Length: 288
Image 1 (cartoon, helix red, strand yellow):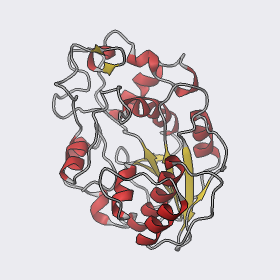
Image 2 (spheres, helix red, strand yellow):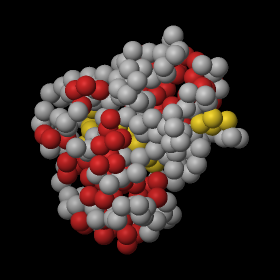
Image 3 (cartoon, one colour):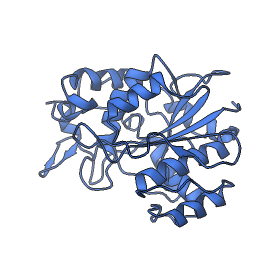
């Protein structure tokens, strides 16, 4: 699959508790070399804001990169939650299950799912609460996360909900988002990419940062000079100055620009190992 999109959107996501999340940022660029711009700069987004924007205001023919994990490990055990009769058979059913169990949680939260009697057995939670089915010391990894490690990155298991680098909470809240946009947008690789229209992919912002020359393990940018240097390295012009720099805003901007440079790379749409997990675990776009 190779096609040219008209717009490229980078979204830094957050799984934190609360109605609004300073950790969410949205950036967009069109074809060409101009730097991406932030959508609603200065606005403190809610997860529902992002949901509404994707459905109602997303520019036509966009490639959207969401910084979250769209699934849990499945291939290693043949199930997301071994031993649970309600363990779903595919990612779309997983998103529906998370959304249903957490339906009373405001702000697309997922605390009720994490605390569910069966689901909680598989997670490491705060307060020293490690489920009896949490695997090993670090938790289970998806196939794409094993491939990320082979590329020198350091992904965390989505079953780990503890620590500054954990991504499980953002993934669970993201699954509620994916469930709600699945009838509006194409979600790769869970659905075939159409000849036109917008497509949403999972991204890992560190991939964009490493492609822009930042060292692995030190991929966060918090000033104008660092962002412009990274943008220049991927053939992008300087950004519009911002009143305040956060790594969330710079991640969204750089990822938007990076998506523009790699969207027509056939190999990234067909990585080795994808076909076996496309319907269950999904894949991180850009991982080979």
